[in-house]
Length: 314
Image 1 (cartoon, rainbow, N blue to C red):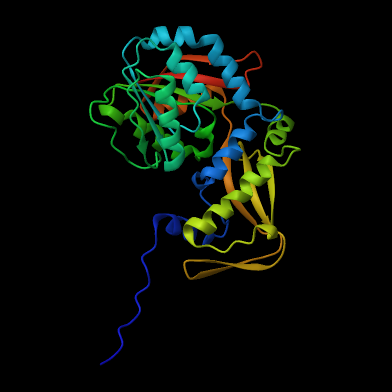
Image 2 (cartoon, helix red, strand yellow):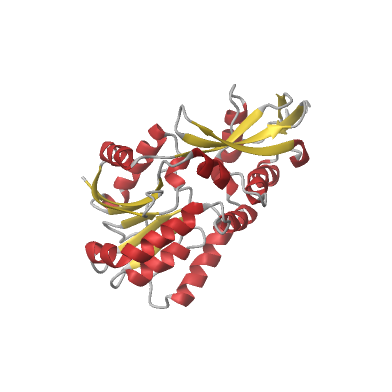
């Protein structure tokens, strides 16, 4: 009797993405995996940093313009939020809306999503909260009965997509709930380079810990063996693509392993972990139109550092 041949375990989707990113000449890791429980907590701390302007700027815009936005949206609307996070801005929107029909938070971090949904039910006891644990960048089905939703995508997450991927993502959103919905989209706008780079290289080092935590998450969830002490954080503006890029820089020659595959890294070799594209209002309108949306209104701050765009399906 011959021994059965050992069959390798099938790769998980996460492992497949990591292998694909490290196999490229310009190595990268998927930014969506920043947000395990520890990463989500670190990002909440980033949002409170003095250098990190997007959160406080968008909050100021919302506090000024939510009465107008709510009136334009009308009563009894479903609110759907991909990448729901901890929901400070969402609470402001729910408080402003006229008798919302319900709320669907979508997040890849299942534990955080469940805790957030439970907390929200306590704060809004009459609200129909229907959490959906999913990767919002992939095709998905909204819960039954959610039609013509108001999709709420605050922050600057759209900038994490490359422009072609951003267009594909926005087009996918236009089909959610059968189409004919509306979109409230937060977008970080073009501004002085020194302001941008300071926001991603904070003096307290929180963003650096957030970036390195990606490796810790992949070690735990994808069976990698990154040595966090052998990488440093770096973020810089790339004028050719109009984006801040975040990197993890190898401090020396080393080899990392993922699902039985080995990858040699040279000293000072960079792994890109995030793109954060910045747009002008005109570019946002053009991108939206190409993705099946028309601009209804735009709300900004006095410095025009950030924009909240109210879009409708074409």
